[in-house]
Length: 407
Figure 1 (tube, rainbow, N blue to C red):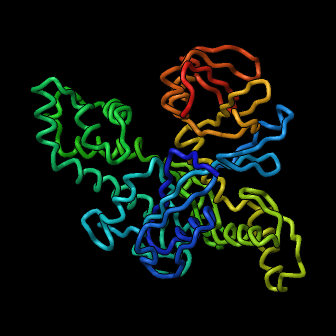
Figure 2 (tube, helix red, strand yellow):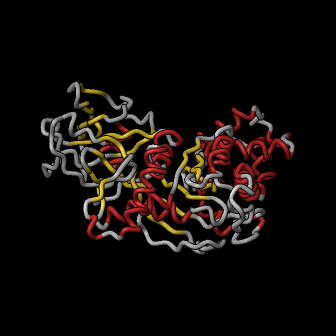
Figure 3 (cartoon, rainbow, N blue to C red):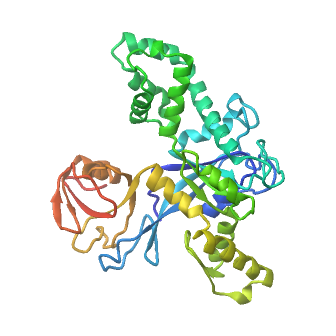
């Protein structure tokens, strides 16, 4: 299967909250899991999937996916994960494993913050009695760590950047984009951060230290959007804490990573029928399960799936892409009549692209020569010819006509 992902999700949080369990559940990639801080020494990388209804049933065709999977009408589109080691207070100063792991966040376009909603781990990630720790503190701590890390990177060159932007032709936004390009921060992020803070971008030398940190914190929120995965939702003390987390300015998804990992491993071994994000499962080989395993599965069904609608892991992934990153799904084809590529494969590719992507931009995403030779595109539902500035809609099936063919 060919890769199609172009956005990266970072899995972040303090130690021992279930980050590596969430990562394993999302990717089925091996990662060490244990109840002590810094189990993750080197960041784990893996591929998970965004789940979305496939369009093949609407068009009444049988598809042949190439860059993704289709299971019973559900298209699973691959995306990349980075599981960063747990952060502790003052990690931005190098404490704990510090900047080594903050640096991994550079590549992330959005963050899933795994929070122990049961309150069973203290601020250092050590186990404590459930309910003793306030998980709201974990959210504030992580905000501070990432903001200070970004500020520390920018502060080295800030005086020079501020002076140069006022005295030369190069504007502040261009200089900051150049300095922060390694953090997956774009000019649009910088412009929006300046707009929201109301700071004068033409006179950055007049910014106070407070102004500077205010700008960087807003830039963090825009360039590294974050949702909270309220993990360990099955612990009794979690309910009250969940309501408190929901009062923060974040999307909060209740989840149980352990349950999702058990279900996915069971499905991988063909013991149960379960797809990522399903609200239920079916045991298909009870004879190969022990009595305690069947009991554990039934507990997952009763205490998590029936109560919450899912384990929350797939919901968190989908929400990160469709709400935080504002992505849509499009299906490019070459043969519009058969909805196929040049090899006759029907609906072979599903692409995740940002809302607002034009037909020509999609052509460039597929292949540079396709974009350079763009003539027009045809939208499959209405068989309507559209120009280069046509803005793609979610679930569009589109054929691009170009003067140049892909290599």
